[in-house]
Length: 444
Ligand code: ADP
Image (cartoon, rainbow, N blue to C red; front, side, top):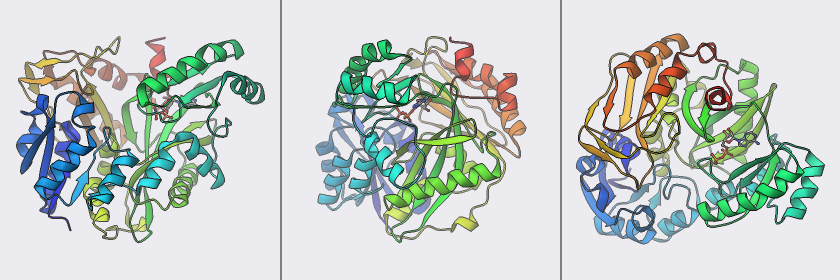
């Protein structure tokens, strides 16, 4: 097992990884930007290294600075968390070249799944359903037009290197396709540095259901059930839960088998998520995320498995600490993302948190790195806290979520709390009648 791990991240996920390391008796190194010098992840790590100015490109995304920090502190492994360098095959390669263990899958697996058009091909070959769409990158408007005639409308143009809901444009007819195609390419270039886009059929009212995968270096691959993440704004998740109310046991088994097939196709190691869209009883692969995800706690709550500890164990070469048959699913868990943003326009609302008080009591977990008198920086993502509840059934998880949102105090900035409360109080949400267009009823 490792003696010391460097955490190449900030905020709640950096703290979450520190907690796992402490339980495993592993020392931690925090890296931080100048803007984050007073952050909790810096306070609670055993050592810390400043790796640059506030701007991510010059600090958390600076591969040279992160590697140098690992070398001077003798860290044997790096946990990338999510975001920043977590899905950078180049970073994983550099770690390997420097004999530092990257806690995640192999670099070539990151790149196969990170290029979403390539991932579609791999998955199709493995026999798992994907949406009708382009074989690979769509180079120009002419090809887009031809494909549009072949597959029919609506279509969605997506950034091949996409993530975080950026670089996606919907076209309901040929005229719109010709208009949005260059816009999607430009957005892709601006967000991800490459203009490549691909196309697939657009579903109007799907549900987003994903499966958690874990694999070890001995070739064992298991799934830890699904998470439903249909409540989204701007194609980004806001509320997640496990299990999904949409799946019959038969459908769940079919999708779990497909998720394992996808992972097997690339000899997957470590934690990953296979994402599907589900509509009219059919499911379609959309992408695989080769890292731990924001919403991983709901899986931890219903399985009792610590995913971060398991990631560290398998990266150290140990086998998974359980077999598929030993995973027991119990109860229901929901996660709400409390973001620093206007609950109507969703524009970020950074600033000073003047007062903070988290909820607690049975079945409540809060993953956060904030406290009173701390500043939500405009430089980084706007998440304030993940509020997670557990119940013996969905009703209990919802009622615990409601009472938690009612008493949670975050003053000084705008947050999504009022919107989250409105969601958990909604009759359709309570019945499990949800889809990715759920929020359109309030924000047409
Ligand atoms: P990202 O990598 O940016 O998160 P995804 O491919 O995972 O992009 O899609 C994010 C969300 O965008 C999905 O959960 C869904 O709401 C929407 N979406 C993506 N592709 C489609 C599609 N073909 N039809 C309908 N909605 C889609």
